[in-house]
Image 1 (cartoon, rainbow, N blue to C red):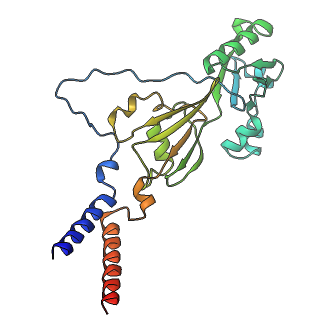
Image 2 (cartoon, one colour; image 1 turned 30 degrees about the vertical axis):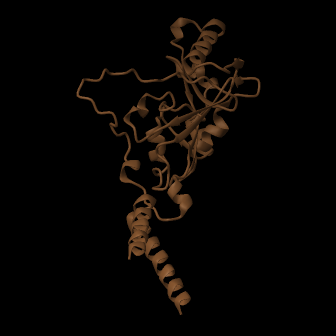
Image 3 (cartoon, rainbow, N blue to C red; image 1 turned 90 degrees about the horizontal axis):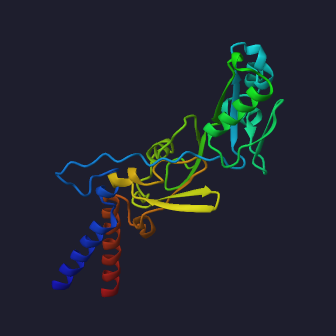
Length: 264
């Protein structure tokens, strides 16, 4: 009788440890609660510096639009090349292997390692110095052709995503990928970031509210996000209590059948 009781206890212990706890599924929890007021921390954000193969949308504006018409893609060309992403690919300015973009009239402009604001200043400076005076009201609008990132692993819709906004944080990226699956490890989300010196890998615990203070929480274009599976998926015991209970019942049934066959 003691042996049977032990087996039952072991099976129930297996049942409770094999399913995924709800606290591992809840985002941004206050794990270290304190009654003292917490100081507001500044958002960790660094301006993005352009890399090879980035695509820029550049529009030159002036008081008289006809003065700068040659610098801009026409509305007819944009509509002929299809949707936003396809249009950006054909009509945007791609950073080549030497870090340059090639603009009409202006020719090559080196943008590698520069911020969007710096590129804007360079283009406006050259236009005013070489072709226009201040009375023309020349100014440039420079934007990345979409915020591109790749997310893989235990998410509902993995792949390369493009969002048409200037800034994207990790929670927005996960939501845009259909959320992390129940088998995804929210406590150890990897963000791999490419920079001038190589690749940098960050680990972010999205179940902890302090994740917002991570340098990887605010993404940069071309970041790669990887969500690995939790150990329960490797065990194959079930994601929820019901699934784990089904596994336990199956094991009990198999054990009982084996015992009866051996007994006979």
